Image (cartoon, rainbow, N blue to C red):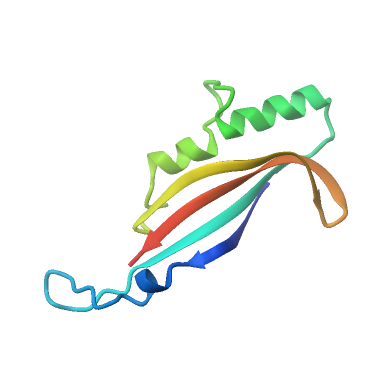
Length: 117
């Protein structure tokens, strides 16, 4: 399961308000640039070794031919199917037990920068 939430700083004011940026036709642009954080969580129903191996595959720490990591999937389609201008995975900043709504999971926290026009 991947939970995605805005993360401070949510948006860059100068970028989001345009600051007088014009496109080639002289029309003002209002690009947006956001920071998102996500929690990639794995149920702890299996052995801890299997849970950790599963998470490592999703993070790209352990490569297999059957799993595409989250970062690689985004790198293969940085426009997220044309819904954004670009999306880039920036950092994995947490790894280990995650409490979500009273249930314990094993997971990692991931950050992305996203821009759209």
